[in-house]
Length: 257
Image (cartoon, rainbow, N blue to C red; front, side, top):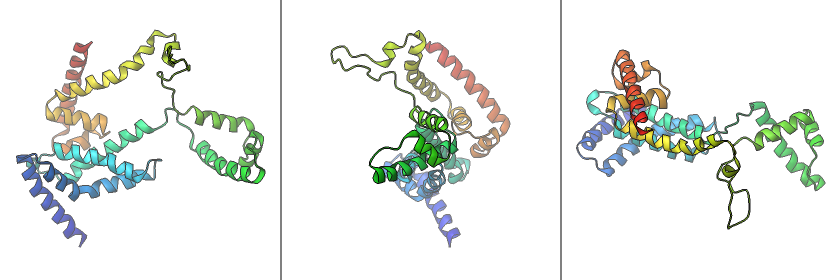
């Protein structure tokens, strides 16, 4: 029964893709998304157990990847849409998780100990009507006081402070953390976003195949062999397109400086 359903989905999707490539109508794209939304659900379910993000948030992020796959898919190449779409969906979710992840990587054991401490502190306050000391918490977790302090410090500093954060309450003379940084190289932090925009613009100027190869290899973490299979080209072609694309990007970025 499942085989028949999958076959019907493929046939319906193929028919809709032919229509969509002739007329870029949003309603047709939405129908394609509805038919293939199971790909997003499957990928979101895989990642929800490996992060702290909600299933609904991952579905939304994965949907963006599905839309990108629909826009890039070429029926004439004869590839299965599911094989083509998964790297886009997975890549979008992975980028989202990377952006949301802590800059400081905390050991799993410390994360588990901190979770245990939350339950302990809650029950201790209800019973004793006060906050437990570091010694009491460390004793409960069966670790040294020094290690418990390190765990708390690591969690507090898991994300960097923004250089734009205000460090005084003077409305007329607001001062940010960046203003207090003596190193002139701090300006490079402000250039990161500009570089990202320029890179996206440079990618947009590349040929479709070259851009696809670069995105699959560098953004979606596919090997050259996997990229060749998805795009239905040879590994040699992938290698050449990579070299060509990187050279063009270097030239384009250099011209902007």
